[in-house]
Length: 190
Image (cartoon, rainbow, N blue to C red):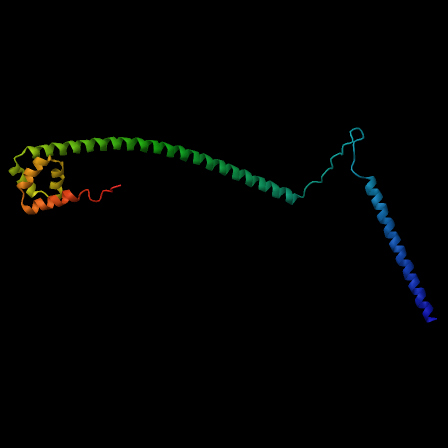
């Protein structure tokens, strides 16, 4: 008798499980039919799908989007200000560069005049030394620094320079000769 009770209890549980399963299947089947029947609304004339109405966004999301839009607007304004400042700075730099180029050209012209005037002065002074009596010129060259004297000797005509060198002491003549011989020694040959 015990064995029968166990079987009867199992049968009842099986029947109940089957009822629950069939109930679930019916509910699912009924929901699918409703979903298919209520699909997207279409316009009968055009066959187009009507847009769905979206619910209002949550207030927190709307507030966050508004704040972000304000930040972007602020950043755009700051960027526009920086671009304007950069444009002004660029114009100021271009103006300064043009002014500096003009000043450089003026300075270059002044230096050319000064160099030309200095060269004219040296040429005149060399001509004066060449016109002097060799004995007087030798006495003057003897008192000059060897580098300074060598500069004039290099500019003088060879015959005038030889006459002046003859009147110099051997030490002064040797110093000037060494400077004259070595002044172009370091010039590149190629």
